[in-house]
Length: 324
Image (tube, helix red, strand yellow):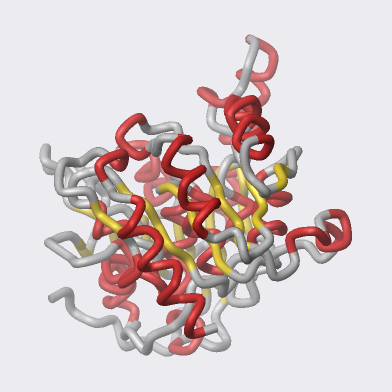
């Protein structure tokens, strides 16, 4: 266990979580817990242009620093702009004079470590580098049962404890009227970019048909548009095309039940408070189950989601629907 910094003079704290949307959502319970311990501190966070949607309007942070990773920028000019933006951000971090910096990663990564190095704070928390070249004064790591629990552990040196805080995701109300058809419907998100987490359309069709007494809505990534349209045409469900991740989450947030594959939408939907059945394929995926509904997540014993049976999905759906 890391030593606790009981220090009321921690005026400025910087968090770094610059990876995926789901990872950042899993961090939000611990961020709320941090605010409870340090109610008057300036709590800032570094994120990237890809995952920033998961922290916008979060009531427990003061400033959000978002930058574009060069790998997400297309073309020489945009990559140069991204690199320049990063340098400006590093300069701002250095000028702020933080008292503590926490890089919330279970394994060492040299890229987020540059923010800790820029800050040069008296207290720097992060995972140990296998080469012994990390900048941290406190090290975190070890085995945890869930990413949310690791995030609590990463902030433990700042006095944080787990008081069963909930995950947060802010949904822009402007999208609710645009997707009013989703209200009290069963929402099916059929997309996952990981082959191990993909689920056959035929099984989705069978599940939707078994739940024909409920209105059903289908959402999907743009590359799965044709599959979603075909699924809608062969069932009573409706497919709602979307232009952004926030639109997808706005649909989910209005639903009665959310049935989804593993991914950012899974974490975001569950964080809005909608009962969630997750179909998960990767080995060890219990670690990434949606926090509030992890007991309803279905895990493949083979590491491939397509092995999960239709009956097991229906069983979890009916269990949650009976409680609603």
